Length: 398
Image (cartoon, rainbow, N blue to C red; front, side):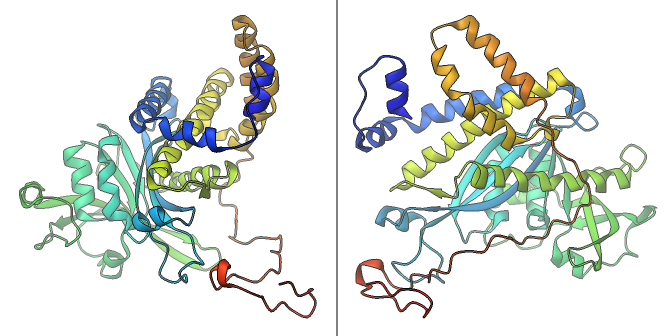
């Protein structure tokens, strides 16, 4: 790509080696990338519409995932591979905790951690991305007293989460105050002992409220196997007249959108493995990944505004394919500002036609149709493997 670009603009074409590119990437400072990312995030927020919010609140979702790194000593030292993998046969894994703004679809921040670190432990490190009057949606892993209290008191925001399984097992639906069909107000008390993995000081822990009034909403649903289940959603939005219970449970289903955003990043953008040799370059790669993602979301946001459709109804994959295919033409008009502006407007009009087929309550089992190749797994470091005993149907190779 770089050679093609240099040739198109009349510059000396660089050699095919990758060392110069790698050295250039390493010279880019993390602070510079953070500043660029901050600018893209603020621009997305600036262009939000009233209809992108829910009752005046910006919708945000938080969730965790992980990516693999190259198997180097530096990467293994900071982000070790899972203990189930043999030494020399696995890859270092870094955990990622991301906060996405569902009102415009872009990322507002990510935090890295060791893959085994629990989501609820990493999540408070991204509290600075939560603004006043935001509505934070998360799964039950984040439903802890400390995290909810910090969101509602420190950040003056609101929560909509699934009830943690430990509280669900002990739930007495007769307790609390009934405020509607399958809805109750309950009082949670602060734990007497500060959790061992809490990052708060004793003074900060003591400053948390001693009690919180929360709203529980129970609703039935069918799981992937067709069995009837019950889900309990918890929120600090207590007024049943202003915030309808069924509307809140329907809104909670939008939390799943962050799973789609993670798939867009890891699968669609091909970022399941960071081809870097050090943790520092892994952090820079993650920032570049979010910058590229937010720039694409910016185009989708402009298209949604022009077409007057919700931005989450547009296809990220369709936008990525279109922008990639238009790369060559943009190079030919790189020196003509007016032509660039006109061509960008054409691209935005085409993006507005890339609509998703919204199918609520569609059953999408996590299964793949395409069969993997029958190659055996590497169970020993490659440099000490002399011969792999293949199946009879395959030709044996040294």
